[in-house]
Image 1: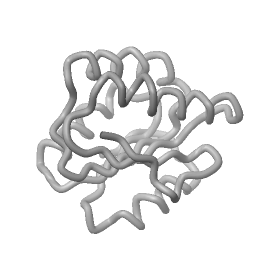
Image 2: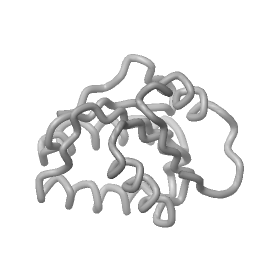
Image 3: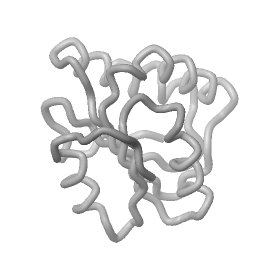
Image 4: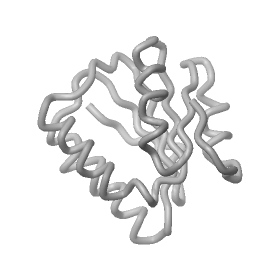
Length: 127
């Protein structure tokens, strides 16, 4: 399940992801919201707060891949917040494939993640 976070605004979108993400989560929620921001702004900054996150259904993983390829050049930053080692590694593995910067934060660093998302970008990806 995906839920939009209230701190979202302008070209910054934050989502809480929990459980197993589905095709519906992408096609009827995340993708339309990101497209709406990209209609108004040249780029988007994304934050994913993972709480009880268990991954993706197969079709949702495919949606993630295709949509990610479509918007990759317009994604400036991605903050991933979690508490599992595999989530940290997921952020690290995504870094070389991402046009924008990717940074992992622990669950107790939500404020720092939002601050990082709002800062001016510098060249290079970090995780």
